[in-house]
Length: 533
Image (cartoon, rainbow, N blue to C red; front, top):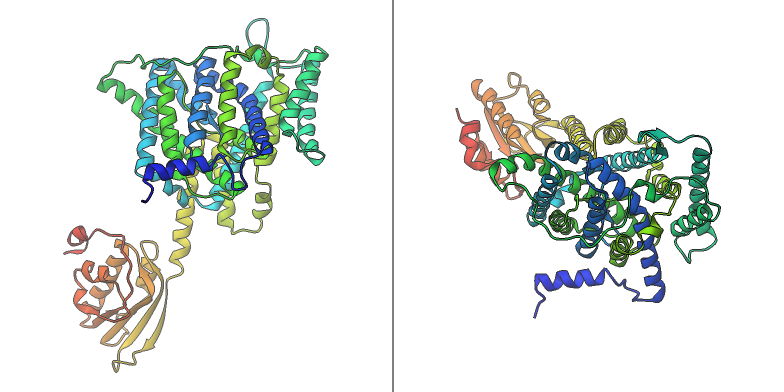
């Protein structure tokens, strides 16, 4: 008896916990230590993003725990880490400022529902239309954003409660420990891979700071990590249409940004781990995670490229690392907050700077001088927009520009070879080559010379492809031109779709045994409205 869909899904999830070579002590050690490393790096990020959004620090930590745990178990790619992110936090600011945190939690619930619907309708597959130059721009832009976000960690609070830049010995010591952390992460793997280099660097730096009582900011200076278990609570907002009008625009934007960042991170991790697929599954997991998070006072989240890179670089390849990271984060909140608060911010900044170095596609700088200028423009454009605006806008801009460039290039590929007909004496044959669609119709129309051509003209589309409504309209325009001069046009090698859709030139079709078969992107029901006179 065949497995059901649920059984197959469960089997695939279980398989992601244990690799093909089977379980081993070494595997669990690497995965759990990778999870611990990620959890340590998640703490200051979650707190910082909660401050950006204008909610309590625990709201960011709860989001990191719940979103991280659910997506680690059910997500589309083992090794990915999700949690509260800056890309979402900046969108939440105005909502929290104008309406309060409870409206944010309701928005997160609706955001999750929209993401679940995206997974049900398999909208995640559209991430395939994102071209490689856009991916490179996304990676580079996000690396720069991560790097710039760490600069704010060199600020401290003065006696008046104002945020000011560090100075003197505090700044010098912070710089030194950032550099020390980066050196350890870079050098240690060359000698030993028993423990993740990132974890060793954090522990070493923390030990030195505590041992020598060096006065630099620590995690506890940001906010207290201590708290209890998140409790279920329905967001305290009026359940009416007015509330929906307020939260829906935010929910839609958050859902879109969350899915775009998650699916691009999924592709990036997939390239590193040599795994593909899982886009719809990731949409469902993100949606379920955010829906649950909203009911437990979390600020919502999505995939985190920085923490995902830390996990993958530390050896995390299965779902164990993601689950471990979430559970360690909960342990920090419940039991070991006093110890976590002793970790110097400089150590975590050093970790994130190494993430920036590892994330930035340095080869893309060389590619800028090798690839076509249009691709280089897209890479730079997406990078800049990611830094100045946000990820969703950058990706949309990149895809649109790439599509326009493709359309422009394709327009110049429509050509024709002219020859006398071998089947009809005195007739002229135009053999069309290249795709015929909205961008190439003008070039197509310029090919023909109705006033100079003989009384019978054959247009052969064997080496062409009619793609859209504009192409069909162009074919009918050509027929009009020849018809007005009393000349006859015959069309060869068009699909049955074209036979049906060409309302005025259908009688000029020449049936052939080798007619192609493909669908034209046009609705037959509206053909008369488009082409009829």
